[in-house]
Length: 552
Image (cartoon, rainbow, N blue to C red):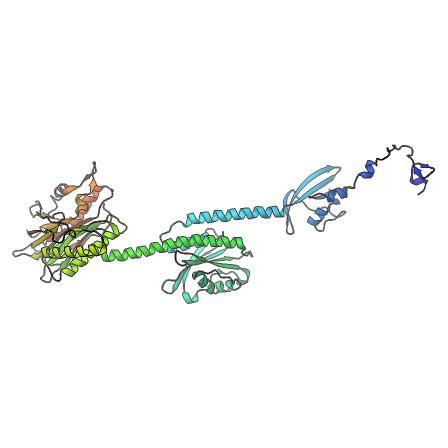
């Protein structure tokens, strides 16, 4: 040190203030000496800071150097813009502050983790919204093919770019539906595969498992022809089962073609969607099975067309209370007798719907069996009563029935001779050739209540062109009109006053139509009508069995 290095010098080695300086009190340091350099201050910022001037970086802290690799003091200013930007694998938020003197400071905040958390929350919300919407859009379809098609379409693009729904096999073959993006709605096609040709992973899913070996899934799906032209090495594939009430109803195959894989959150979404699609398919399968059972019941329990019998013209109409079933508690039928005549009947059982229809089937089967040993209506009705009683006791229920059972034979001189027996049913009406409508005096006790019921009996003669009309209480007890009154036998007789020339088929349908008009859309009991007409002289027997439907 020399005298030029200090402003003043005193003997003994003490530095003294020189001219133009301010003395510093003892024990205090100079503020200038205590001030750290700007770079030291910037390095303690949590934000990255870049100070630029004239397109050149003048200052750069450690955080900014880490966030902006390749940027250095003295180098070119980085190309930045306010807002969020991406640098490498990091997400940054940039803010620009003018400093004056042509200098600008950029403050950089690393928001990678925050954005990832926000993206995860948004993805979770999107998945939850998708699954909730899927439940509503899948709804409760009544046909499994439509349910499978809807499930495949909903999965694209929410879960992947290609989705295939494969149904559990029926009769050794599986049906499948495939949805392919990116078009919205996605294109959907379908096909079938033999169970032996299904991809092993799909077979595993149909057995209730979730394939853990995923390396070969793309090859399996490609061999099945489901990749829609995408190269097998550029896709990610996953398969999940579609759970049902007892066993999986199908399997869901999802393909991604954009390089994305499937993380655990994605798999949870696949499983969640699979559960919802499986529930919809299970409901559709259950409906199909119930429909098949109902169809079988309808085929065996619905009234059958009366047979052609010489001299007899038939007409029938049937309107079940539950129109979706096409079966109910009213019944009618006719059988050809060995002597050339016909056995006919119409009745009503207690109850409604399937249970009542099953009971009617038992009665019809009983008549079918008993007519081989007895053709007299009265004696046959008593035998049937014993059979119904035995069935009721064995089943632990108290079912009963009402019915009219009759036999028709050609009469000497033309027309038909009818022998009628009644078990507590409404008496028939007879439409005479002159237009009169007669109420047959016929009564009796319910069938299936007591061991030895009183059975009503009557014998009538139908001239050619005259008709005997049997009907259930669904006709007379139909409530309608302006006051909600029963239609009643009186109104029916009045309405039939001018119908005596009608063929039997037209007459039966006319009665059903009159009842429907009176109901005017109201609920009703089962309605059954059976018309038996003596064929007019010179005419040919004709009959028509009206298709069951809703009362009009």
